[in-house]
Structure formats: C-alpha cells, structure tokens
Image (cartoon, rainbow, N blue to C red; front, top):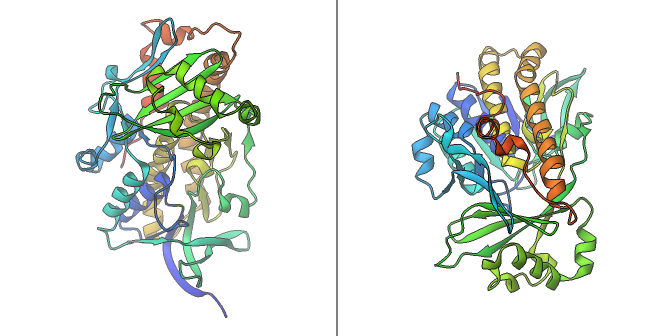
Amino acid sequence: MSAELERTSCCVVGGGPAGAVLSLLLARNGVPVTLLEGHKDFDREFRGDTLHPSVMEIMDEIGLADALLDLPHTKLHDLTLRTKQAAFKMVDFTRLKTRFPYITLMPQAKFLEFVTGQARRYPHFRLLMGAQVRELIMEEGVSHGVRYWDETGVERELRALLTVAADGRFSRLRKLAGLEPVRSSPPMDVLWFRLPRSPGDTQGFGGRIGQGHTLAILPREDHFQLGYLILKGGYQTLREEGIEKFHASLVSLAPEFADRVSLIKSWGDLSILPVESSYLRKWYLPGLLLIGDAAHVMSPVGGVGINYAIQDAVVAANVLSEALRNGRVMEADLARVQRQRYWPTRFIQRFQAFIQERVIRTALDPNASFAPPALFRLPLLRRLPARIVGFGLRKVHVE
C-alpha cells in the first residue's frame, strides 16, 4: 500500500531548539510549516538547558521574553572556577550591555513546549510528535520532502518545497543525504547526574577543579545538575576503580555534597556524554538545509550549542521566508544561510578548542598546576569571553 500523501511549504525534521524556533518564525511569517519530532514528548534527561543573552534578545524581538521568564528558571550571572586555593571568575555577564546580562537556566522541555505552544497560535503551523522519518524523497538530485511513520505506525509521505534537518548531532537526514562531517577530538567526556537540593543549600553555579578532576555545578529549583569531566576514553578506568572512589572524588571537589553522594548507588545513575565537535563543509543540497547540531556539533564548553542552533534558525527564517511564500527556494538561498552562519560557528568551535586545550586538559592533569589563561585574568580582556559566550562573533536579529 502506498504512503498517504501530505504537502507543506517547509518540512522541519527535529523538534529541538533549532527546529522549534525556525517553525515558529516561519509560521509568524505566513509560511506553511510542518514540524516532525521523533519522540512523543520533549522530556529528555540532561538536555542542554542554557539560554544565553543572544537567545533572550531574540525572544524579546518577537515579544516573548517576558512570558518566557514567567516560567520557572534560574539566572547565572557569571561562570566561576574554584580550586582549593582560589576562585577565578572566568566569565562575567553582568558587564554586557543587554537587558539580559545572565544565562537563563530552564529545562529544555519547558522551553520547547513554550515555543511550540506559541507556534500553535498560527494557522500555518503543524506539529507531529512521534513521527519517525525513514527516508528523504530525492528526485533527480533534489529533495522533495520525507517519508515517515506517524505515531500510529502509518507510513506517510510529506512533500515540501524545502526540508530542514534540525535533528541533532546524530542527524538521520544528514546520513540519508550522504553528508559527512569533519570531526575533531576534544580531550574530555562528561558524566551527567543529579543530586537533590537541601533547604539550606546556597551553592550557585560553579566549576570545581582539584587533583585532576573537574566538576560543573548547575543549580535547579529542586536539584543540582552536575557534570563530572573525565579524560576522553577514561570512563572504563573510572568504573573499574569503583563507585566509592567516585564518591570520594566528588566530596573532595564539593564537600557540601558529602551528605548525599551515597544516593548515586551505581553507574546506571549517571549518563555519559561523549564530547564531540564537528562541522559540515556544506550545509545544503537542492531542497535540503541542515542547521544546528545537524550542521555543526558543539562541545559543551560554554553551553553555547542551543544558542548557535537558534541563531541558525533565525537566519534561515530571515533568508528563506519570502522564497518559501513565493513557492521557489533556490540553492543560492540556502548558500546564503550558510554564508551568514558558517564562520560564526567555526569561530566558536575554535574558541572552545582553545578552552579545552588551555583550561580543561590542564585541569584534568593531576600533575599540573592550574591557572587560567591571561584572557580570563586581565581586566582589559575579561569582557571578551562574556561577549563571545553570550552572543558569539556577531549578534543575530529577527527581521
């Protein structure tokens, strides 16, 4: 039996930050858009939760920042690393000239529910959850949409002028299109886990460094999200040393957690994130555009991945809305999106590589004495990291 046929102007695959924001902006601009999300809800463990000043300004430009900030969230005004000897304020967002001089920490599921909820106000928007894309519809080298199974298992064919792959670091559409990213080798992986907050806790965001170990601490309303950095490929060795030694390392880095580390009973209570950094040399084929992690996977350094994905979405909406309304998207239009976003993403990846080599690799070396690079210590240079992390190479605006 043939697949049931549907049509739209733009098919967006992947309901993460890039796909959700692009769909909202296109719908606002009068473009029929269908957003396909493979999962049945947005709730996933340890998704990135940081909304930088760049994203908050974008949300403000479309009149949604105040409503977004009505949702439960926390604010991080600086990024500080602590050793047993000293504290180093690596990034200070309070110096930025913006209405939002902080990182907004909000569960990504809540952000995505908010964005797609706003998109539903427009008749041109349609969201399909549990939609499993299985193939690109390619005819004479041009993408004309996708075939997918809906949440009931029915096979459907969605024809579109443009298909946008916003389906993340393991992008299925990227693989189906035969596009191979250029990969680098960051020196670390991250173990993510949670510990509950106690009523008397005053600990804010921070990074702890000591004896070759590093711990990132992100406060939530009722818990701490914690990231334990290890050298690339070191997870098996850590496991062989035993969970009790891991507990001891955590307490050494953050003694205030001594009363609750026993809640981590096994390695199954942790999730390992293999850190990757990669990029595509070409983000498009005729009828197909890749954005966000599908086009460039970011290291977690600085938590910038969400924000660069959303900036991609804004530029794509700015460039492509008129072409989609007119019913004709040229390859030159897709190339224009890449031209505006390629070097900003390559710049931040190189900045992350600098931090990984000059800060993190040293911090994970038990025989090295840690000191931050001059970029983070000299008063004249201290504003630069905040500008880079908060906004990137240049600001992106909604047209």
